[in-house]
Length: 229
Image (cartoon, rainbow, N blue to C red):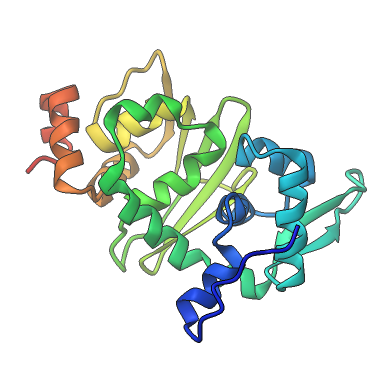
């Protein structure tokens, strides 16, 4: 199938020629956290037909956005990863996610997959330049770590060395703790410096409409977390 092109002398149109097809940016979203084999990428993207995902990967490879690599033993398998050009989409994609919060509904939170959780946090957290914190996330069999430094958040799959804070629980429990200050210890295990949790809560930035929905949903704990109007 031939790719569609806008055919315009416009850099926005040129970018959309390469990443504007359905599933393409979701492939980039998953690979921001590190290399993935085709099967893992298919699960992370969620719902893409195999033939369509194959075409998207082929096109992204042709444009130098994605490349294949051989994983080290014992994996010994082919995986996909972002090139340096592809990594350049990290900032724009996170900003697009922040813009997308204007359309996010509070009732959609239970639908967040554990593999999406790290980038979800990168979207809603705005760390100050002097913040330094390593957060380990464990959620439904997945492990990720986020490193906050110099006003930015880097995220990867796997375990961190000596994290400051460890949160273990389903995505909804993690987000309830960070966004609304609601911690149900039956659903969320917290290890390490609990002061780090307060630091993260203070970094949450949401659109006013979504903040009001949170207040309606959980009441006083959200105000205590400092995210109320």
